[in-house]
Image (tube, rainbow, N blue to C red):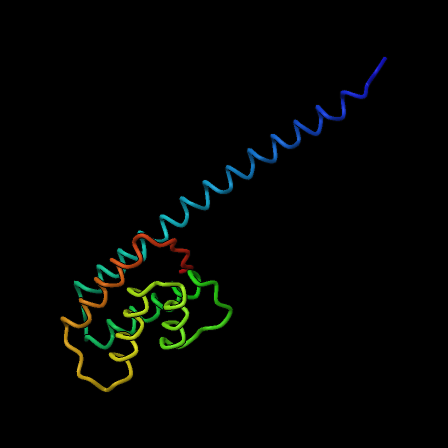
Length: 138
């Protein structure tokens, strides 16, 4: 009896099972990423609605944004906004680069922040990141 055909069939079955498992894991990760993004956006919305001070709100946005950029750009260390902006310019992400420059200015220039500044930055962050793959860990 010739059993040479059994090995290729077994390998094919194993490959199909592994493919199905990888597809399942990929779908689960997409759902997890979507839920994390929704939670981040909900957090930003709630911060916008109950701002204690514009500086506190901007600091909260700063933490979310830095986490986003660390994951989006696959950074190993936390960089400054000017450093992140340069990387984004090289990737032709001018909207995100402008956001980084504005955040750097608002956080470190000593300019008096208004509630409108904090809300505008939160809205800009939401707008710019909605189309990006958001893998934030909270």
